[in-house]
Amino acid sequence: MKKAVFTLSALAMTISLIAGGIVHNTNQSASFIRIPVRDAAFGIDAVYYNPAGLFRLNDGFHLSLSNQYISQNRNIKSTFPGMNLNEFEGSVTAPVFPTAYAVYKKNRFAFSLGFNPIGGGGSALFEKGLPSFEMQPSMIPASLTAAGIPTSQYSLDTEFEGKSIYYGFQGGVSYKVRDEISFSVGLRYVSLSNSYTGFLKNIMINPNYPVIGYSGSMVPATTFFNDLSTYLIGVSNALDNTGNSLQKIIDNGYGNTPLANGTMIGMSPEQIAALQGGITQVGGDPTGMTIAQAQQFYYGASAQFDANSKTMANNAIATSDKGVDATQKGSALIPIIGMNLQFTENFNMSVKYEFKAKVDVENDTKKDDVGMFPDKAKVPSDIPGMISVGLQYAPIERLKIHAGFHQYFDRKVQYGKQINNQYVDNYDVMSDDYKEYGLGLEFAITKKLLVSAGYLRTQTGVKEIYQSDLDHSLSTNSFAGGFRYNFTEKIGVDLGIMNTKYNEDTRDFGLYKETYNRKNFVAALGIDISF
Image 1 (cartoon, helix red, strand yellow):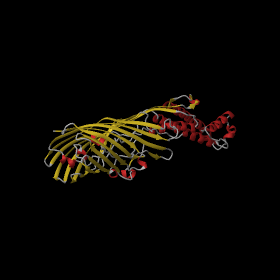
Image 2 (cartoon, helix red, strand yellow; image 1 turned 120 degrees about the vertical axis):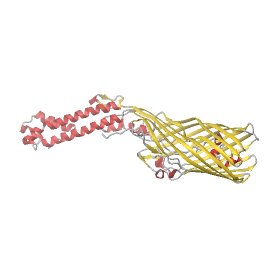
Image 3 (cartoon, rainbow, N blue to C red; image 1 turned 90 degrees about the horizontal axis):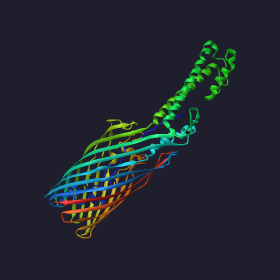
Image 4 (cartoon, rainbow, N blue to C red; image 1 turned 30 degrees about the horizontal axis):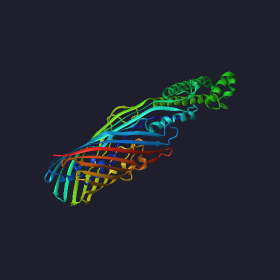
């Protein structure tokens, strides 16, 4: 019987929420949720989106606080043969997704601070595990049946949860050269934390093997494999002893005597029949065998049963309860530069570039039964550089049109992506960088009330080989809307909702296929205060 190896494949899991690249989040304010194109806007959230445009704020101190409630459902389908389940559901929740920005503006200068979950921000829970957890236990019945032990069922208990959060703390300075042009420089400190917990336990099977007392009832796989290992080593020892019993005859010079003619050298017919029957029972043919050949056959059969016993012992270990409890942490510093061009009073353009950061997260492992998270080991988890370009145009006084573009330079960094348990460069698993395109409209119904709506398209650049049940990247279409109400000139509230539809993708593994899909919903509330 072939050796079965069962693992809890807890690879690094990417948890991105709503908008942004594979690593980044760009849903960084309530204003963004009501109009998901803020790249050339002049609000207080320009601390993140358009820091060079902060010169448009009035002199004084400005504060923006917001929170988002985010819900994401993940759906994974697999055609792997023999599994009890072919559809797996996971949920990501982030009931608290806060952002905070502060600006002090004086004449040509603006000094800003910001806090936001720049990446991650939620936890993904798969209460019934994932296809990669279910596949290998599902192969046990067919494997045992092929080895002559009829088995038709299996069951297991499994669960996996991944959490990820990248907290960003940034500061910046903006300077207006003249009304038409301004610049900004800043620095963001990012604290990265990923955690993985999961288990694969209580694997049960229903082997029918009366030789060792199993009659088709559901039993722990580990118990069965241990019992089978004990039985096989007993058979191995018996075969070895039988081979040893022929040594004296061989030493007396009768090794070349045909076993069937053993009575000529003093062997009893019963002894000969037992030796021939033993050879037949373990799959041999005693016809024409000499006594020496019979001995070698018994030794060879003993070695094979011994090897099978060891395999079953390994299977007993492999099907025992497995668990993972590991955390990864790291940090990075990211320089940020920006430029704002005010071509006319009605037309504005901005450009922002965030530099890449080389990051290695370090494992802090409490439990790792599968060897995936060696304690203190470091794993590449870079943050890519990204560029954003925004346009804002007001064709009439009450209407503003926003457009934006983002590109994340994924292929120039490493995400710790593994293929066949080996780290690979992003160029090996990506054909293009991740990109976003956005368009939004904002209309002032009154001086106090603004309504807005927008569309955001994200286009992933990963190859098919990148996709897996734990880590996949999908293109999306997001539709958003909401309003802003200004209670006074100094206090305004934003309320927005966004719904995201993912483009389903399928990976063909040859023997089977996996299909990945998700859906998102977010609601956000924010308040801006100027002093």
